[in-house]
Length: 145
Image (cartoon, rainbow, N blue to C red):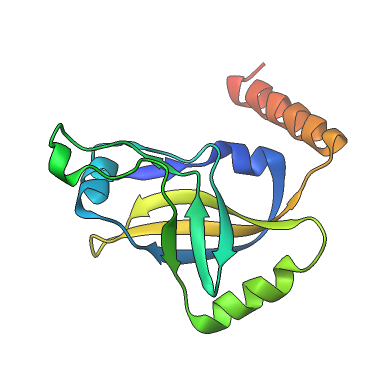
């Protein structure tokens, strides 16, 4: 069973410019919960804390009922990127309106959890309306009407 959690809201709220695939530092109960489809990314975003890039607001539900190894559902989780990529992202974040949003959480072939992040620029309200119109047109085409 392939685990693939997508942040559909990110494509609606932002113009996605560059994407990066990065590792994520997790506890044992978090990876078990992800494998049981216990993760959501609706309100998640990425930010620099010192020199580290972390994802904030991504919810990973507690696994099981063992009170000894329960993790905090919305804690900050460190992302693993090369230093060159981190420097490039820091430089691009200085531009007005730029942010980093997670777009996809998946389990790679080697068994590690990976997070796909995107450098994004916020959409204006008329851009969002255009996205909705294009989605409606595509739905009508797919239906064959």
